Length: 442
Length: 165
Image (tube, rainbow over all chains, first blue to last red; front, side, top):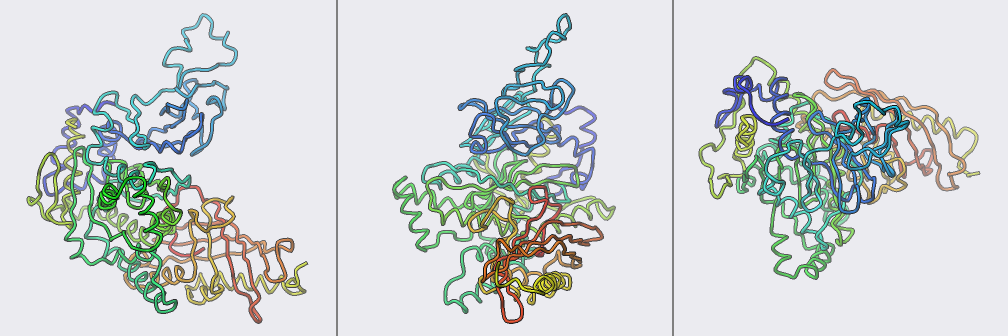
């Protein structure tokens, strides 16, 4: 699973990515998809879960790295492991649950082989049967295979199937800001996962989802209906109750923000394909809940640092290729490609430790209204993604256009910044990293 | 025994539930919303163990204003994924008046549903149970809370739910 390109790959990948457009095969080709798994998903760091999901010994959660079924499990207090979900005896999956506690060991349901949480063998029934055979329970072939590298940044755990490569913090580079922003907004500097994971399947390529996250041109068009509906109800609430509508309506009505306002924002591309959209819908109201929260924050951090934290102003960070993080709303979506035409998203949100309940509810409302399976927002996104995927499989053209504001990006200290929030810089930037990974250069 | 449970209540409630699902299948959103009390809630838990949807993650947790928002989106000409509009057919059955949980002011009714949906030439099915908390309202009833326990609450959703089930 190393990322070295072979000559055959070079022929396959030749000419797919240009500076301002990419070939449709990047989205629809089975062969290209297999190469993406090999060169990108099996080489980079992939999000596994949050430390608060696995607090006690034996707590585990399962996830996919490309096609590989993995288990993230808590060993002792100071360690956790990422193992392939496969018994080395006859290949059975060790667990088929999304999360749980394995007790003291993983026990295979087939022949009761037992494994410690680092993957080593704890016990095998009737061990005498292996006397005088080549089998050695201390051999790595007898153990559950572990991901070569596992690391966490501020509680967010990633695993890599590549033994070599940049360490997690180096790889995250500018995308560390997502996790710093989430954690710093907690008076205690940490977040805790809420153990509900919404899972939604998109009938489209994984890259279409990532591209859409930083596509500031689409919200007022794709989400015009939902945004308009919420804006109407905001007015009605005001008229009927004499009070301002709760903040959650603003989450929805903000999707009607006119295009010219997005123009004033900025996107930035960091090394390894990560990117972010800065500027937000003005989430610093002066209601009593916010003021109480600010007071708790000032007590924890002091006024100057609190202002610095609240002025970070990140809308969205993409940790390429596996995560979309909305740090001011404490949520993330993990991207699990299932095939060129199908992508699973796993949607999580977090509590800010030490923050008032009302602040959690803001995150919750966004989670329930925008990211849940009853979303009035993503209903139209997923529909557009599906339409893109359908159109891209046609012979109606070979290229996808990312020309918008091409050639106008600023480059400084390894960061590429857009001239406008509407620039297609994030798409070009992700494909620059894509090509780098595919050629084995990243 | 709740004073609300009388001879004929079973049939009356069954008709009420059939009527409610008919409103969804014929896209009469406002009529459907009007079945709820002013503070009525439509709740689809993310976990069947949840006892109250307030302040926890839910698949749906909507009051009148959120229902109205959803309705306005569905009826908006630029709700792209409503073109063509998905079609549904609800079957409601196994209707049981829960005498133990009902009081003199509120009737608790349990039932099960099976809903088919056609969207973009594909068919989906949704199954689960309803629990209606009903308040007498003249000759009919109003819904204080409708709890919808969908069986696949924790399984990946293939696309999303745009409309109440």
